[in-house]
Length: 344
Ligand code: FE
Image (cartoon, rainbow, N blue to C red; front, side, top):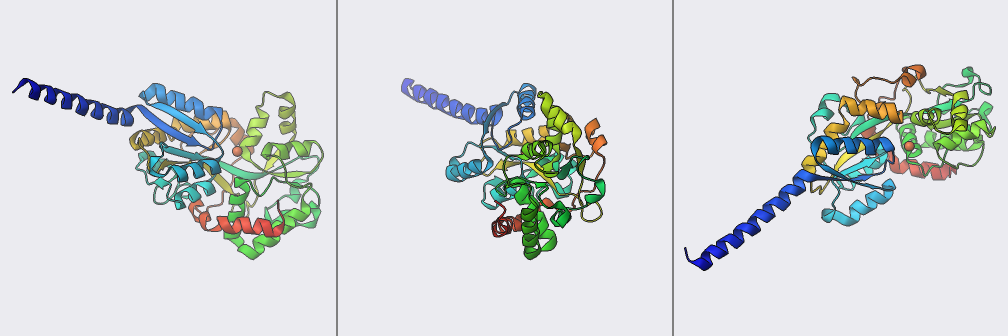
């Protein structure tokens, strides 16, 4: 081999090796997350995952709709590997926009109930929450409580606290009401709730509970974990407020309480899909599932994960068994129904 030929060969070898390394390091070293969840426990679990696997976790937190827009705009140039939402509805919308890809994660098939995940494996629940009624037992007699539907009865006039219809939890709840009763009945229900509201919708779920304590209303529609967060707050007043309230699981005599999930998925153009799969396996491990419960008071999606004492106090309950993926068809109608009913 001539000297210059050897030189060429060496140059090509160096280029080829560096290309190979850069593509490997893409697969081996990072996972990029777009998350609509903003909880400390998530970051703790990501850090543990980094320590255990050596895969670096890059986290971008933003509003879920902004992240969906961003994924759409970035298209196949998106660096996102994982997409996380605090709502099944938004996950279904992202899937319908072609922003997700199916995944092959053993823990999903083995441990996640079919109603809490996409049948074609485009997304899965990682935690579960129930949208319940929170009430002050000094102002509400237990016999007054029954279903979401009965909140339109006249005795609730001026007593109901619930946040805006812009809220994703309310939109998915409305989708479940439409799934059960159809659009027309759902519209009547929404109008009845508006009539019985203690005040125009404002604030988040926590603010509805605080408004009960402030005497503005008597019953609030709230996700369970917010009660856990208030009960364990560093703020004494929040602990006191939550301590005087009780939780009621509606619709126990019929379809069950509306549940929602925090969902996780692999982005359609994920550069590090293998790492993404590993992280999802990790978050579905029994240990991670119990960490979500212990720290954020969300129900595990795995049946074998240990319940915390607070869940036992609240008691077992019947969940709406309609698979969450079937709510997708009712998300657009839900927005229309809210508008027509004047639920701001
Ligand atoms: Fe939340």
